Length: 92
Image 1: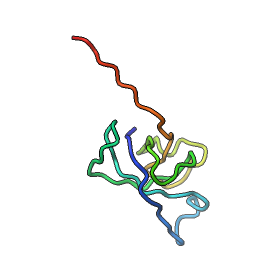
Image 2: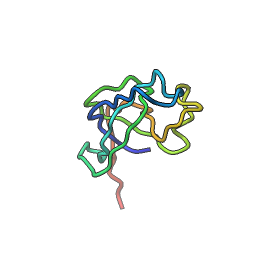
Image 3: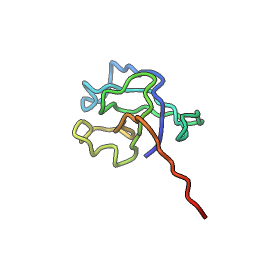
Image 4: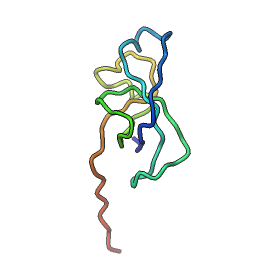
């Protein structure tokens, strides 16, 4: 899974029938603090995310394991909207 920020939508009028009714969002990978990285993903939205949302993406074959993505030709799905990342310091 990876951290990402939703930066836009993707509209496709001609697509595989298994993508009908699915919202496609453009996501930019970010680090745990929300700082932008260099990669982008188009992901199916499984959690009602919107532009500006800090999200968790699942990708690869695991992306086809949600209720709305079964049997769909997808490589990335938004599986969570992140409220907070809590990193505790570990003493050596």
